[in-house]
Amino acid sequence: MMNNYSRKLLLMLMALLATTTIQAGKFQNFKVSTYIRAQDVARMEDDKFLQTTWETVSSQVDLDKIYIETHRDAFIVPEKTLLKVKKFFLSKGLEVGGGITFTRSEPSDFETYSYAREEERQQVKYISEYTAKYFDDFILDDFFFIDLKNDDEIAAKGDKSWTEYRLRLMADAGRELVVNPAKAVNPKVKVIVKYPNWYDHFHGLGFNLEEEPSYFDGIWTGTETRDPGSAQHLQNYLSYNIMRYFDNVAPGRNGGGWVDAGGIHMSMDRYAEQLHLTMLSRTPEIILWNYMQLAEVKITPAMRASWQAEGGNSFRYDEMVAPFTKDGKTITPTTMARFANVTLHQTDRLVGQLGRPVGLVSYKPYHSSGEDFLQNYLGMIGLPMDMHPQWIDNRQQVLLTQQAAKDPQIVEKIKQQLKRGGDVIITTGLLKTIKDKLADVVELYCGDLKAIVNDFGMAGKSEREFIIPQVKYFTNDAWEVVSAGRPLRGGVSGYPILLRDTYSKGMLFVLTIPDDFGNLYDYPAGALNVIRRAMSKDVGAYIEGPSKVSLFPYDNKTMVVENFNDNAVSIRVVVNSKVKALRNLLTGEKVDPVEVQYSRNRFFGYSDTQTVFDIRMAAHSYVGLGY
Image 1 (cartoon, rainbow, N blue to C red):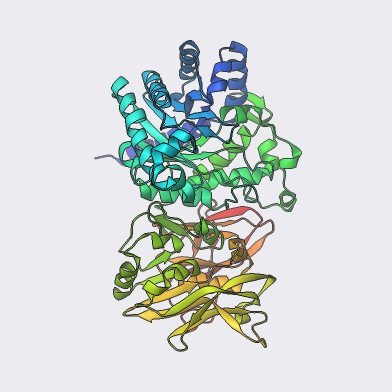
Image 2 (spheres, one colour; image 1 turned 30 degrees about the horizontal axis):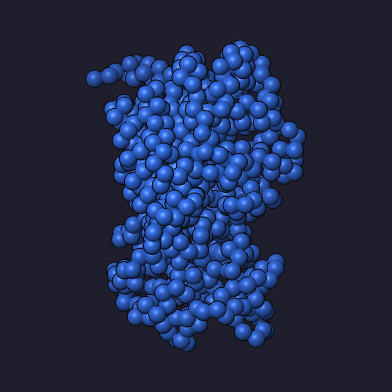
């Protein structure tokens, strides 16, 4: 057995080892990688370009792996250059993998290969074989889909819908033209397909989430959210939510997240948040897209947001741009690579203390559409999402959006959940779609009638008016938990925001979704608090406060709360059990509970089994907590 002296010596050695690892600049809980596009790989035939870009990047960000692309836009990197670049990065101590982008012309609306044309199919096959010859793993960038409707594709489609045709076409192409040919050349090769961030539209262009993960060796996840006001309108929370969804699509085989520089024009914080949220999913690796962005996107004063002057932010621009010492040299940061490095090291210290992510289960069947990307808006109002492509039985609550109508057995599954004594939360979009079928459970109606609201009664007022669908029900058969009107108090009429009905041992809720999902952020804190409380049974805690504050809970009684507002906010953390205190996971600081009056109302106030904590959060900041 080990004596006390030996035990102390072992602990000292372990501490020294940990310190050495941190000083070496590597990460404790994940890998950090980058990717070089084929055209930039070709430029690296020039020794000066190869060396100077590496010096810029490696001085400011610590990398574990690099992916070298062989093909993009009908261009293939010559073998001589490919081998030279691979040898160079291996000499720098990096792991090296390959990459392929199956585009013919990105400037032409991301033109892909035409998989109905035999000559183009053979080109895809050749590129896969060529890449497998030089790498033991390679990743397909976003574009393994088809966006063409040329005459050959029209003829091949026949009477099928474009979605049906493309799903079958690309599922077969992945196996016949990429995976099998690659493995014939290199039996050891691991072929990975990277899926982009627009997951709710995948099936329309042939991304087959149901079949492809079963024969590709792994998948990868695009977590770029960039500017939510730009073309895709992706909300910040998607950088986390899509990781969790793909984890559930391919358990244990989702290799990592992928973030680019999009959104950095808004501020350094917008870029850093994408990295941070990706890693809160507990993913094992992140790719910083791409190598040349790390080398060339310069730090500018415009990246310092106005709220940085107030202080207390989690991502601190002034500290990131300050000179630092590495390998005995003083380095002045020049590119976005420094933002990535500081953010990821900071996040690394937090995620090692977090358990497995948990949340409110939301069932999104494969190839389903409706209320697109809604779960990301719900995440931004403080509802922690856990999206699954299959129905999950063993939860107290399940959330169903309009996407769930894709399942022809959805009403029977709703019945079984309610008969077990569980809750079902449906959105107005789903209610409108399956109203007639659902009538065997509850007789509710949501049609084309609208209401303009701004007053939520005792739950507060919104700062603007907005439009919601009207939900109709039989008096005393269903009950409004939260209502809204214009005005509601002293007004003419009101409409349900959160409605409840009963069936067997369970409870069915209807959550009203505004016509513009962004108006969810206009719901007053009082209304959001009730919604969060009603939907927290599987989570163990919830938050109270304004919108644009998200909760990330884990199964080891830890959580992260993140404020995406441009101003400081006061929030409450409500734990659904009696605990003595909360502990700040990074500082060790203890947060004591506050005294509150208890209420018997199941939706308003607090029960005597809950513990309540007050927390003040700066703009664009987060806190890790344990209890």
